[in-house]
Structure formats: C-alpha cells, structure tokens
Image (cartoon, rainbow, N blue to C red; front, side):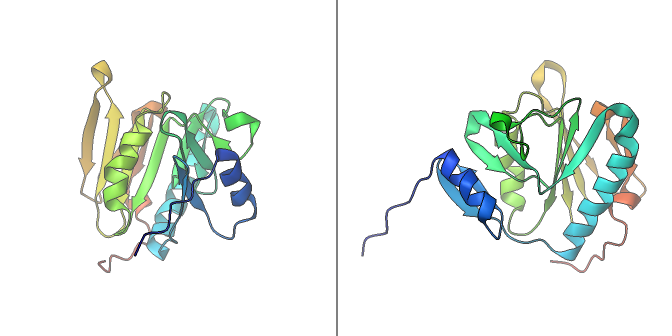
Length: 192
C-alpha cells in the first residue's frame, strides 16, 4: 500500500489556517504539525516565570511573552510557539504582523515527555539560527533541573545546570536572577 503524499503549505496558507484554528500548530518547511496540550505543572512553571519576569523587566525596557505569541525563525523556515520569550526594546514582527515575533533575546521551554528530545536537540539547533538569541533555558517539569545555554566568547554556547531548589537562575542578558523556588512554586513532582 502506498503512503499518501505529504501535503505542503505556503507560509501564507499556514498563517491563514492559524487564524481560525482551534489549536496551535508549528510550521516547518511547508509542513504543519499540531502542538500538544500542556500539564498543570507545565502551566504553573510558565505562569510563575512569566509573572516574575514581567514584574522585574518593567524598568529594563524588556517584556516576556507566553506561548500565545508565535516566533518565526527565518533561516530555518520555522514558525513555532516557545513557552516564553523575552524581548528587549521594540519587538520586531514577521511581515508587519503583530502576532509573530522575530527578535527574542531569551527563550524558555518547559520539557515534557513528548517534546524533551526535540527541545534539547533540533529545536535548539533551529533557535541558534536567530541572530538576537543570547540565552536558551530548558526547565524540567518532573524534577528540579534547569539547563541554561548562553552564548559565550567566540559565539560558543555554554551550558550551566541548576539542580538545587535553593539555586538562582542567572539571566545575564537582562541582569536578573530568579530563584528556582519561584520557578517551581506549587509544582507537584509526581513523576512522569
């Protein structure tokens, strides 16, 4: 039996589809992929981070956007929805749209069982193609574990890991520290 031929879409078709869709989808090189829903602990981490970041970024001309704001990664022909993006200065938008950003400084992803390999691997490779990106932070929702990748000397990415609830995540790009206790507030570690 033959497999049905893959259907490819233009960027314009994808963006039109997203405007009326009941769920969010990622676009990669002409293909559209439905995104999975998130657990309560995933949502708690996103909420904790977003609230903390936005309160503390007010005086820095920066702001954090949650996963309803789309990201376009031009060099990789990717549209996706990071859990949180931090922008400083004026947001830059894809083709003058007000729902698709192109200039994040920091991206946060909360790991789930279904996305952890993608978030650590190919997705991070895609994100590294964003000229403005300086930090990429991956947060495990099942245990205290944060991986922070920062662009270092000579354009090399440097990994810092945090595994203790008493640690503070240091975001050098925006000169902030966030206690892991704050990030994981109300999270119930029940395993995966």
